[in-house]
Image 1 (cartoon, rainbow over the protein chains, first blue to last red):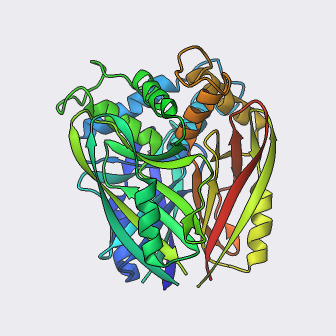
Image 2: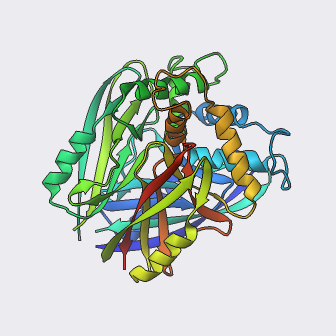
Length: 138
Length: 138
Length: 138
């Protein structure tokens, strides 16, 4: 049994979903681990990780529109010192989560046909987002 | 330290929560692993996994009613080519998540008294849903 | 490769976020594991785990206010035998989740600068909440 860790940095340009499935796939192949468990962890409280459809880009826009409507900007927040998009970003992060756990088989993530791995950026400004990948297996 | 993987297939018949706690318990017992970490991963973007109360079935109905109201069908979605229940299913999957991580102790999941493991089917039509289970431990 | 498990008990006094980052940090240090994967699991269906900002306490209050508004108490629930705060607690648990997966590096959780680990108590009454921690690594 062995393990490995890696830090991915994703440079975001505003609120959007940024797919990084291929980056993870490439790194995994290099570890030489065939069967195991992959964990991805986002080190931020205004960006998050999620898995969703990677075929139709309209799906990604609809996901973001729902978050915009369900967690709107506005004067209702006590915490507003970092701008109107800050507190909605924390709430959207709470709803979507900081970590993903994905089994690995045949040296690849055991994703379904339409699943892609995304960083969800919830802030308007450009950011460098850090994601820690951990793999354990054989 | 050893590990094992298994694929569960759940045949769904419309929007509902499908408990499969006992299936996981039985498979775990067969692996012979006493202490470790179990991961369950749903290979779909319109069905998800969650843990909730397995005593009162009304709880499960209320969970689904809340999702129906918070993420309604309607003309507001750009992505509608697969039917009116498709985009709400993707959003509900985003909110509830694709993976569960559950410690194992004494050869069993360390669930609380009232916790059950559910597949949440978010589409109306019948589907065969695949869940990958991964266990690592001793 | 080695593993360890521990049970944390958090005594809650009503709906709030209870940070226990330091408790986990201290326990981790005692395990002697330097690099690995930490899993935290909440054994309840009306309390959950989340990671969010631990600098401004207003953030935590705004997170709770959003949950109060998005998942309100009211007569709309079929399941109401345990009080008006029970079904909203199950829904809020569904949205925020029972488990967290956090890579460990240098003997510490690989948290970002502003990330804290919280138990979210969704019931009004006092409760003793159990969280299982599992660490695997070297």
